[in-house]
Every structure is written in C-alpha cells, then in structure tokens.
Length: 106
Image (cartoon, rainbow, N blue to C red; front, side, top):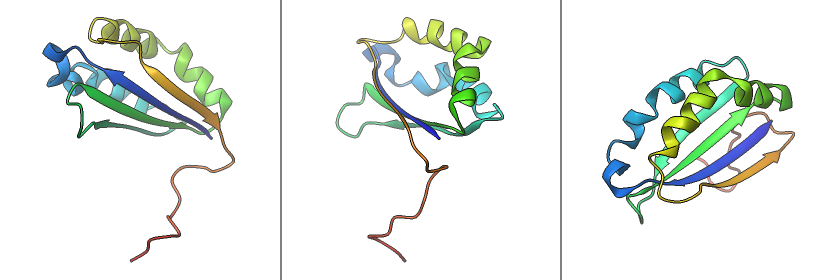
C-alpha cells in the first residue's frame, strides 16, 4: 500500500469552505479502483489546517491517481486556496488499509 499524509494550510478566508471546494476531487479520488481511503480531518489547534490521509493499493494505483485529470484539476483548485506549501509524508508499506490497534480494544 502507498500511504500518504498531506498537511494543508488554507487561507483564512477559505478555511470554512475547504471541504466544499475540494469535494469534486475527493469524490473522484474515492471512486478510483485502487483507492483504499481518502480522508480529510481539520486540526483542533489551527482552524486553517487540514490533514489528508490517503491510501492506494499499490504503486500503480498511486501513479494512476497522479496522472488523472481530477488530480490535476484538484491541484489547480487548491493552489489558490493555500496559505503555505503543503507538507507530505509518502511511504510504501506491506499493510493493506487500516488494521486493528492492539494496545486498545473493546
């Protein structure tokens, strides 16, 4: 699996509408055959900051995502919304998707 975490800092005037403005990109990415998850979270410490967690089945799925028209359109849309260059973590792991947390169970 390709696991990606991206931290975006929105311009203050776009922070409250960020998720609406990236909705088409989110929907299209979630529909990709190799997408495992594509989840946005808003920071509890900085209301202008969002974190995107992405999972793709393999390198080919990740490459298809980056080559897609909706990826290019998403970058173009976000370029006018950001206050800083996004920060990214991109790793390949043998795990496929989310697994149970062994330290805390029901």
